Image (tube, rainbow, N blue to C red; front, side, top):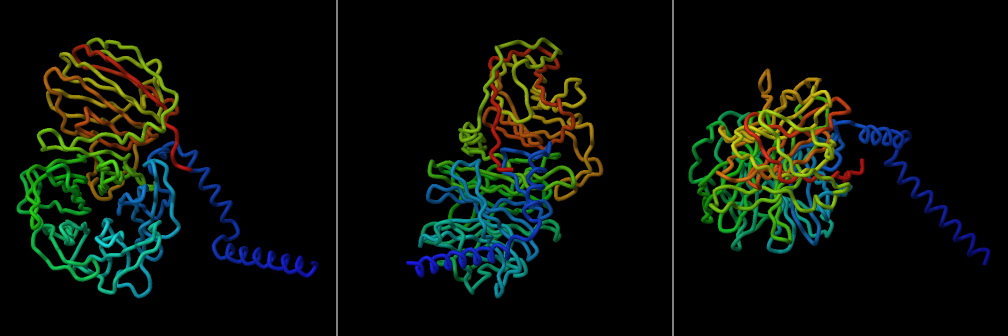
Length: 504
């Protein structure tokens, strides 16, 4: 009996020593204290969002969301970041679109791979049931794939045939009618005049694909010749096909049109980002409810922060005339609501403003209906300090037919602007104007979401505008409704605090 006890004790201590050895390989003296300092700094950061998906790497410059796919009850998303060994994809998963789990295994370059790093791409379900990720293989000049049958999508294989499409850039790949298709995005403007996107196809995702030709039949008016098609995402919506993508100089945008299996014929083109905005690299998935859900990378407008925030998930549907996308928040945001408040209906008289009594905060959802009557320019101001030094107006301009976010008085401290990608001017634009038209007699239905430095506005389900701002005053939490000319009536105004969804 004693010998058994001794053996048990010895085995136990061996396991402890083995575990300690494993831990010493990954956790070094000071790491835990450093992690605590980082977490405390993140929690106390006055501008770091708390319910948007926000990445913590900082100097890794997390950016493009990639590989969005819904599988077995789980939303999977990757994001691109710069590691010591090159560009990696970090895996995240969620069951509710707001609470995310970080996975320990990246999609990355391994010794013997032709690629030197993993750049932008997408994920899709192959004919054999595997999940396939298509990506631009840095250093290959082309596009590569990796595939997985692992239920958690943590274990990936790469075929020896990589790259399977060459030349290539920012791919989007899918399976349709027993064939594999790949859009290879147009070469970005940084390399010179961009080339149009190319279509490849083949019978296998592990064998080289054949070039079919130009993906577009033609481009549309309103798209400048210097605009590339990068970060493409192509999907069917009702009886139309939609391409969301970016041009590096203009940000997120989309086309709606017809697809015949050989070429895409665009019929309409619209922006999802406008000068002064920072909505970039859109990525979508189709979930089990039949919803097409989109995220985008929202670039910081100033230097020195992580650049790692994703837009809130939004649901895309076709407008009745099938020329536009309707854009609405995902219903799951309601699970974060607490402390509801509301204002009784009230009228704002001509050229006046009203500060709300019951609704305030900088981590907030507001849902309101306004009857503009004869007003031509009116709206709501958020992140307002009591003395009015800081405020961010959200403006409806009936005559100009725009929805505007005005950042001129958003912060007392003007940031050192991030010149990455779209913000190139010496004096960056301080308003962002999205096209939006109220029909005669139509009321304005606004849904406004605040998250410390993030501001997202949905108007009548037809338009959405996203902005990053940097209030500095602790009392920049007030909300003000105003009209610049004729009276308006606020018929309803409800709000909720939004509980943090991020761990830190």
